[in-house]
Length: 211
Image 1 (cartoon, rainbow, N blue to C red):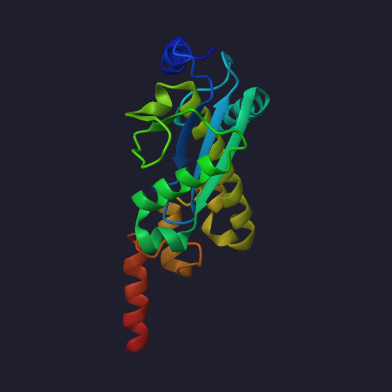
Image 2: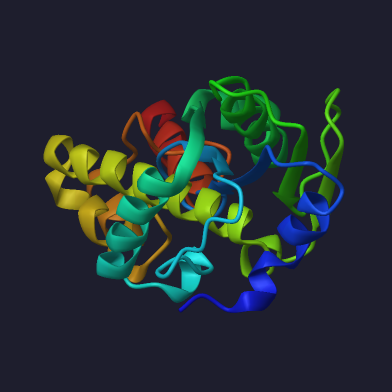
């Protein structure tokens, strides 16, 4: 059962007559490869979700169960993606924010209020940026699960294109296995070229090429 304290922000807004509350979060700031994916979720008023918790606390199987529940109890779900190219061009913080704004725009129901996981945004809708929001708000937790499962599914697909890198296992995060594969096989088109050690490997390859 989800911790009841995770409903505190939503309940306070319901009491003010605000019912269309969008929780917004992203997944994939830390990986060396793949996009950053954001989700916006508006849950039906007073929805209680049994499996939903901070996505980082859940196993892959638990996240899949939570995703089914979110789809059943959501009024609207929006997904936004910032590509590797965008991340390299404008930096990961700004790319994460752009993905979140895009996720909000994808909602088929316009939210009256937005709750984000510590991300302030310039938007014409009232909002709160809550520190560790994915552990404090059921709406943000739901968004974190949608974002994480969407991104993981993408990285599993990328594993089929680049099987030697182990993307299905580590999802692009800088594990020892991933870094060894980078050093052995080089940089793929889905690697973030402004991130270390990708940047270092590219510089070394360029130096060797020039020699």
